[in-house]
Length: 146
View 1 (tube, rainbow, N blue to C red):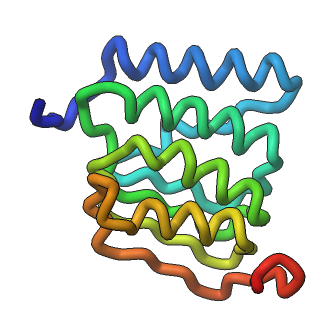
View 2: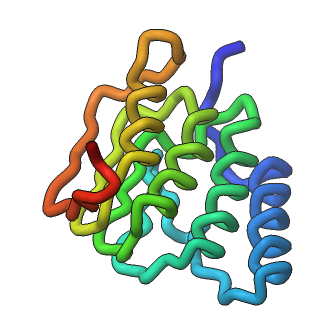
């Protein structure tokens, strides 16, 4: 089935519900994530994202990817204070978004879990169309990467 770009609809409502339910369950503040998706690009920039928030956002991203519609094909996760575990959670959720073609990750941290997930997403075994992976000013955890 060919995926098509879509506006607000039932899929987005389901994704929002999953996101807000997860935020409520974990007693965390919901970030204005849906307002960050425009013209095929998801730009989540400049937040301090905790593990609980990464889980909640991941649930939303996964719900969007489970539809047969394209909400975005680029994601920008710059300057969020993300650690390896949080980036891994984003990547795991994004794995189902086979339309994803660009990931930008600047001024965060990276480690073994997220590197392994990137390898899975870039391998020929997956249907990803990732054409650009931009990692800049990324702090590597030397104890984690061997």
